[in-house]
Amino acid sequence: MEVLGLNLNRISFFRRVLDFLKKESVMTIAVILAVLSSFISSPKMEYIDFRVLILLFNLMIVVSAYRKLSVMDSIAVSILKKCNNSSTLSFALVFITFFSSMIITNDVALITFVPLSLITLEKAGINPIKTVVLQTIAANLGSCFTPIGNPQNLYIYSFYSVPSAEFFRITGVIILISAIVLAVVTLISDRNNLTVDIKPIYPSSKTDTIVFSALFIIILLSVFNVIDYKIVLLITILTVFIVDRSLFMKVDYALLITFIGFFIFIGNISAVPTVRDFMSSLLKTPESTFFTSIAMSQIISNVPATVLLSGFTDHFKELLLGVNIGGMGTLIASLASLISYKIYAAENNEETSAYMKKFTLYNIIGLLIFIPAVYFLAVHTIW
Image (cartoon, rainbow, N blue to C red; front, side, top):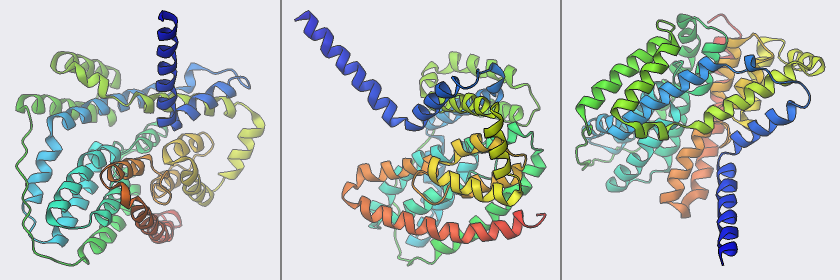
């Protein structure tokens, strides 16, 4: 019986491992590629960009603290209570997601506000599909504005040492087009009068909110190279250790491992002259970098595409624009899109087909608008 119980425990353990690897498929692929490519070329520690990893870790800690303290929920509810018709409600939900994603990242913005939207729209008697799809697009587009909005931005900002003013100048064109398009699409909806009945939400601890807000400012200073990121890492660890150690368990370590895997893979294959020459020729011009990054994002999602292509091109402007626009399109183009889909499917499993149809339609239209607009405004010119 003991042997049988031991075998069952082993089977259960391996099943949990397999389930985790399936759930974190991008991480699994990154690790496999890193291992396989190491047989071709010896991996080196210098391939790993520890600054990006540390900055991501620090930001994840603060964002997890904000989520646990219900800081963003509190802000959202106070805004939603001012809405008096269905059009302004949809507008508020989409643009809360749009602007918050610039600070708390696109995936966290969706984790925070999509559930809130489902509850609010259900109480208002409004079908949530359009709003949730627009929130997803808004999160992917809004997050492109700042270096901390999404992982690919932080990586490009650090890897190419992009000046802050230059970074915002490049991404500003996407934000400008996004704000106009999202405002038009949300405000053309029917304006049915309604009363939003939501109980007020307050941060669970004012003291902790102040502490982590101060930490967030310090982390931002490290992002913009005002304070050494290594010192800030120590400050972050010490703060969490004193205030709330459970936040260490909230960090997306799978994403960090994914980056490490791709760093090693790209470093290994970059050492192979044939591969390096082919990829460099493929990304020789700004235009080819722009369109290749969009296309690659549709297949492997924009974060892996960024890390992969960055090793073979100096056209950081076109790469930055391409991978952010490339977040639209397929469901896997941005992994943040999978988050809102899973949240919606969990509450409305019978309507996932309708969701996917609208998601695909809006994202295709989005690409048809943004690709030529950004190309002629920012790639083909000197915006």
